Length: 402
Image 1 (cartoon, rainbow, N blue to C red):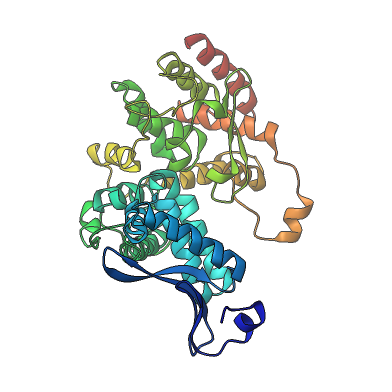
Image 2 (tube, rainbow, N blue to C red):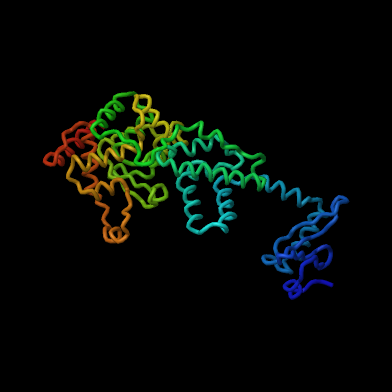
């Protein structure tokens, strides 16, 4: 006797036949699924049609009719499904599928942190790559920019990437298990000490900048100089694209998705930073691509900038540490308020009440501050009486040279 909606709803554990091979299978747990049993090439096969919670009786009958017709036409639905599973999604899609599967056992806050770590640090680098093409070399490249800058997060992400690749293997998207044991061998040794990133004393930074400027220009040297001029994080430089810049108004607008605090950050460009950009713009490949790139499409690795320091015999100092040098210089050598320097660094106020009331971004004061920092880097005296005059004179000289 054919099934009815009421019978489907109250069916007890077992196999309940509707007709022509269509059955409702009810497990002891109460789970209900539709199955179509047919003969194909002399073999009896069961074809799953989905859960009865999602597929109604009428829809199951329609799906069964469609499947019977396809089999008569010579199709092999099971083989087609296997082939579909072999078409690997990209790494971002695989990660999100993995997260959706695992999140039932997690607190929502943990899941949000888990997925946001990928969104912030990994998807921009390898998210669009097919998951079956992710190997140790890809993971090294993805983690190199943060391995020394935020070591704990980088180690967590290495473990999380392994979970995603294991999930992809179970799903059939990756034919063999991917071992990430060699990843650490392709990355520099992390300092076990916790604390602030090692910084060069601010008094020594001008000499480094002069040495970089005097050497043959390379993408890495330009990126390092630009990073120091603007006191930004290395990732913000590496992934910068031309559409973020308004050179006429000397403004760099970094979208929130690229910022650590997830908020748009507007950077006032100092005269030498602007001059550097104008030179690179004359050499650009297109108007929308990456600014700091060797091939016009792929961003340089963060290790490129770190290697410049190591090649000069500068050990222990990190690219991120130049932000600390900027902070020390601002507090010890200028009269700018601390909140102006904090805003220049795109630091988020920990006090929510204070953040709610302090709505200004100190843009004009930050423009003065960054011009004064650039003046200091070029060894122009910078005391409280001469600060503004020097910045103006330096700006004029730099524009003339550009």
